[in-house]
Image 1 (cartoon, rainbow, N blue to C red):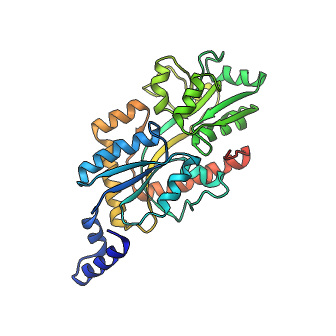
Image 2 (cartoon, helix red, strand yellow):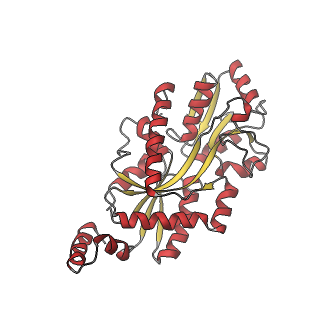
Image 3 (tube, one colour):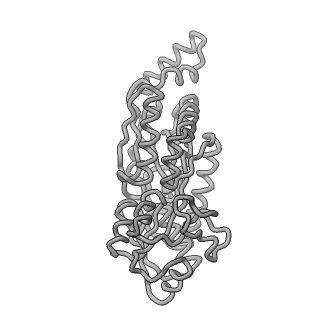
Length: 323
């Protein structure tokens, strides 16, 4: 249902004594839901979008189509989603790059506070630092020592991703390394770039790296969670390797264009929050390195504001660039 049609129908419902918000929730969805996924196929955003999308389709009885538009720090998908009709049939699935790219790019194409309604933070994953197996470093302490002796490069899922900014914050600002960022188009190319020794170091969210670390194709150096992750128990945390209290996350969340009726936002929040807590969904996400989250839309909106401020500070202090 287009916005104009919804307004007319809601007005008629009001004349009949039916609250417009109730009508919006009851009438939705009336057609296919398009989810703009701000990441490439196989990456963390895509994984989350598809886990949620399939079950949401089953729940609502409408098709949910995942439209992957990765690149440019997630701004490609975000720019498209901005123009979506605010009727609950266009959603954006983006990561913490939503908060970071807003300050990193001179013209991100969206206002992080006004153009979208945060729906739900569906899951978080610590970022992980890994190296090519031929790199001498076996842990973060050794990696920093190596970086003091020679200039190193690290690959990430792209400029504006939180792994990129974790590298700037941890390796450049805190460890004091003269290190160069090499942006890739998404997480998997960054991982494969480390496998092939195009760069000695990689930094991504955990999910796409787990299996290659287990297979010995890359070596895990440190995770940015406060505790070690069950899927990679031998990989130490950043905090236990000399940076007490350090933690960073890649979060994957859903947004709706600003103006989407609150009743629909609340229904989406409840549905997606319940989906990621289902035993099979939770198991799949947890094995990959995601910690499912179930929060309110208001709680997530407050968190987004904190994240925008946090990464804006890192970008300013580190001099991080979009290219």
